[in-house]
Length: 326
Image (cartoon, rainbow, N blue to C red; front, side, top):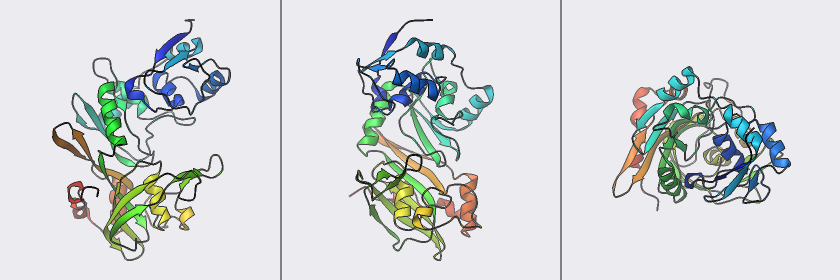
C-alpha cells in the first residue's frame, strides 16, 4: 500500500465542502469510511483536523492517508450505458464549456444513498485527460441547464461570475394557487431550520441570509394554479422552492415545501417537481453573452397540459424579455 501523500486544492475548487472534494477526487470512498478517516484525524487540512463540512480554499494542502489512495486505485469510470446517457444530455460543447440538459430525478453529486449522479459520469466527457468541472448545482428533482467548465481556469471565472451575480438564469415553474400580483420581487432572507434530516430553508431561521427572486406570471388557471417565470438574484439553497412556498404558492410536486405552505399535492397533477432551469446567460469577456435554452421535459409539458395550455405556450417568457436587475 502506498504511503501518505499531499494534494493542493485547485483554483476551481474554491469553497467546495471537504466531503465533496473527497467525492470528486476519490469517488469509490464510501461515506462511512470517510467519516472514520475524519474522526481519526487521518485527513488533515493545512496540518489540522478537518470536518466534512469544512470549505476548502485554493492553495490549501490536504494530507491524504494511505486508505484514501487504495480507494482511488479502485476507481472505475462510468459504464458504457452511463457514458452514452451523459453524452446524450449535452446541448453545448466548446473549448471552455459543456452544458447539459439535466433530467428531473438525476442528482448532480453523490451522497450516502446516491450512487448514480452527473459527477460520477463526467469521465465520459473528458477531453485530453481532463474531466469537466461542476461550477454550480441543481436539485435532484429540478430539470434543465447545468453548466460545466472544461478546465480549472474557466471554472474559477465562472464561479466568480455566479458569485458576482453576472450570470442570469430564468426558471419556469408551475405553482399551486396564484400569486396576488402579475410580477414582483420576493425579498425574503433564507436560512436552514428544523430537526436533523428534516431541515428546510425558511425566512424564520436565525441565520437567514439575504435572498431575492424576481417572478412573473405567464399564465393562470383561475386560483388553482399558475405558470410563472422565476429569476433568482441570489443563489441560496432551495431558494426558488422556499420563496414560492413562503408567499403561499408552492411549486407543484414539491413534497418538502408544499406542506409547510399548507398545501398538498393536487390529486390530478402529473408526477414530478414542476421546476425547470429554462435559460441561462453567461458572460464572455468583451463579446456578447452566451445564451442557452433547455427544452421543457415531458413531465413539465404534462404540467402545462394540466393547466390547459398547449405546446404553443412554450414560446412565451424569454430571458431577453426580462429587464436587467435594477
